[in-house]
Length: 134
Length: 346
Image 1: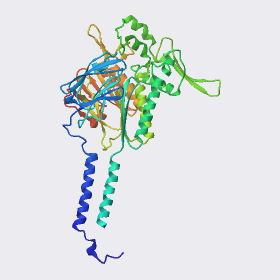
Image 2: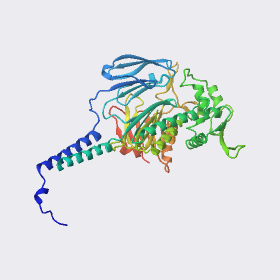
Image 3: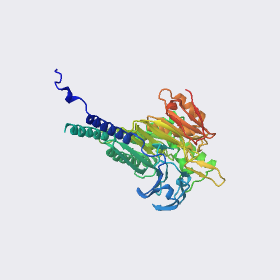
Image 4: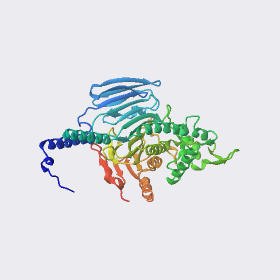
């Protein structure tokens, strides 16, 4: 091993420091992008309604107030959006599970009518659970 | 020039790390087994894993449905005959669960489910005489299965029930399906994902950010959550009578889970039971059984399972949330839920 005969050439310069800083900054931003929070706590809820596997409506909950009617497989549901929550007001399906499920108001929650194949899902806010059991 | 090249190389390195940190996400949903299912998977094999999982679930429904006239279960309930070895294996497990739980879980309760018809258009409250007439048809002794020699070399599986009896594998079919999805995920190298088959959940590995999955247990008395469980690589199954029920003309509420001992909807002092264990089929059977047992017997049953322990969350009708001690470090109380939290001791 020989020592370098011109040490002045290997001494870090301000440009080198700039490159290091840029790389560190990019690394931090990347980590934040992929491992940091994905949404803001005040992110609005979005109400997504799927009918027969196709999205029929997707709108911010706050601007989706009122009654909405969906029909599929010979059944008709009336969905009522009010005061930040969603419920199935009426359905002519057998079983009435969708009506009895009550209101939903949190991200990740769903109302499902199996006979009509209608799914009402709330999404959008941060810190919600990954999956709901019950 | 060297500085520019260094900067470009560094950028390329950072971008390659970006690719590592954002595993590919795929998701699908389907209606099957009388419920709505959602599956999410991360990783290179995610798309293929979900496609194969959906196909497997549909195939299992075709085998295990009680209402499809081409299913194994239909064949068993209508004279018996040749069935798949998969159906026989599940039958064997179902009968073993019935034995373990003292009959609290029983697939032969089907005639009484039909009698009450709680999930149908026309639920009704039968007379005690009607119930008494069907109770003798309930019990594992009415189910037979095994291998039969065929004319050609080899054998095939057969299964049948005694006359008038019927089976319904709905109490474990979704759990069995979730076990199948777990195997498919593993075969495709999926190490992160969630599977929700109605009240049956499987959480695969950790979240992409390396943290455990947050599994919310539905509050049976409200629209929120009773608690959050931080879990990985396990199955979580909830049973309860709070979603499927009917109200009789006199105002009495009848929930849909039939107690095989009485032939009537279980009069449980529990609102819901959530079972957590690494076997989806077992978790499914146990959640139903513990609900039927009620709190005292359920806790006693849990204490007896020393060799193959499981975890559970019991929500009682008198406002308590009873947890097994293995959940202590995985449990987060939900604000707004008013349950008194109690942890059991072994």
